[in-house]
Length: 145
Image 1 (spheres, one colour):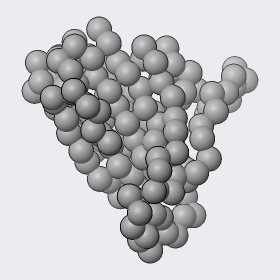
Image 2 (cartoon, one colour):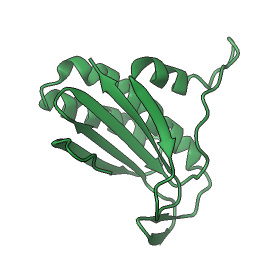
Image 3 (cartoon, one colour):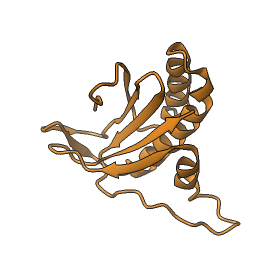
């Protein structure tokens, strides 16, 4: 989902597999550095990691999807967009699960549930919406220096 007026953009479709997370992290770090925004590369990498991890878990058990009005059988991919206006970086991740994420306050001993807390602390803003003509949702985060 390309943001209007954001001249730098990258798109990556990933299989909903465990290897999606490291691939997405590396892609985000490299592309942001290539754009001359090395100071944001680490933050963007962490945000991408958390959002793609959540999408991987949300995709478990799904057997079909609809994206931009087109139905597809099989395990849906995870879609990643990284965009920049040369000062900020917008990260968007789509998965076919329609349930919107909810930030949790996990117990101290909990092994999971801190991802959106991390995204909230690292990004200027974040949110989620259900795109028209598609199943699932897009979770986004805006990263600034």
